[in-house]
Length: 65
Image (cartoon, rainbow, N blue to C red; front, side, top):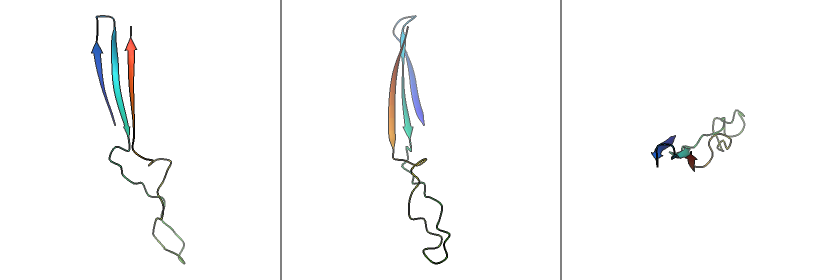
């Protein structure tokens, strides 16, 4: 999710502010369930780290002239 706003200082100069949010609602993305019949069948003991990492926020400010 991202939010941005353009601001004009003069006719030719302005800047753009933007905030980008990753995993904004802090949803856990579980890994594939265990398919081994002998131990904990169907349970997921860990979370995916590649796509469902921690909540992060990145802000940028760009000056246009």
